[in-house]
Length: 135
Image (tube, rainbow, N blue to C red; front, side):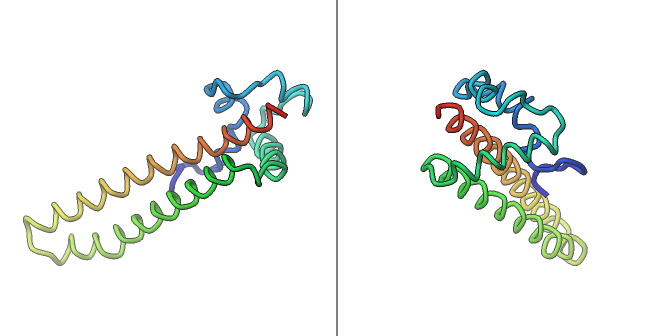
């Protein structure tokens, strides 16, 4: 519900070929020294990234970004559920001018929370890579 993908949903699946290249804090050369040639297959990227996360999960930056990502993800999921179970019935059963406005407000809230969750997910991935690359 957050990343809108069918396959390779997790942001760790794009850790090395997309996210690491966009963050100046990540030293890709150092990561290659520590872990060998970095994978390009999405599932293999996520496996290696998760290994790095487990090794660095007690780091304050990693733990903080993980908590923020989980909170944003859960808020987006709740907004989606609220949209489906409150917005759609009200759209059908509510008064004409107000029902459309209410539904659109719920859609906007969901979309904003999805953007927040996606950003926190990418930041979580890059924080793990940044912490791992300074070892």
